[in-house]
Length: 90
Image 1 (cartoon, one colour):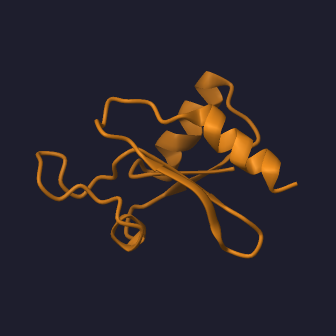
Image 2 (tube, rainbow, N blue to C red; image 1 turned 30 degrees about the vertical axis):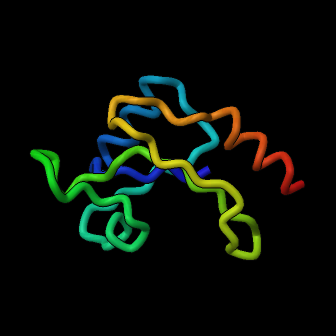
């Protein structure tokens, strides 16, 4: 599981440690075009340049098998549906 956000890598690592999150790879969009490339960059708000919340499940052949872009930044995505899509890949 890759967790990608605009936070800097040291902040992500600290968050994962404090929250006891394991078995994920935290990655940062800092100095990258990831948000723009995947259509996740916020452009028309005070949070311009940051990323919206989304889940993208990509299989071993680089095919997107599940994606969700939340309606509101404060909304949580449907984690169970993403996990179900991952289970179906097995």
